Image 1: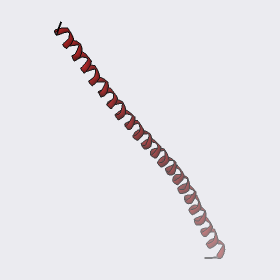
Image 2 (image 1 turned 180 degrees about the vertical axis):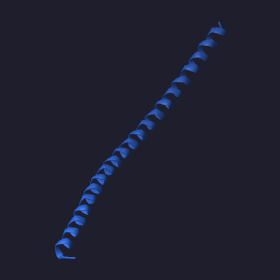
Image 3 (image 1 turned 90 degrees about the vertical axis):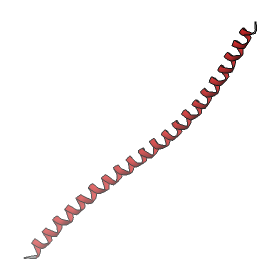
Image 4 (image 1 turned 45 degrees about the horizontal axis):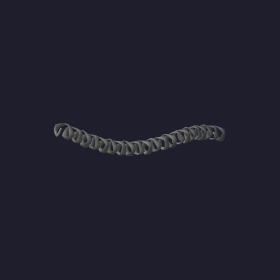
Length: 80
């Protein structure tokens, strides 16, 4: 095998490897972006969950106060 063929073969293999490297680098960047987006979504979901829990507690407090008011009104009506 002459040197020209050897170098041509090596050059083709190197070009193929460089193409694969570029493809993997692009995929890596896409995966990094996806991971960052997933982390942001997870953080947002956690914050939303906390807000929902706070609102549920507030709602329960309001419900209890209304129940006491209704009971007071009913007691006032029956004592008349």
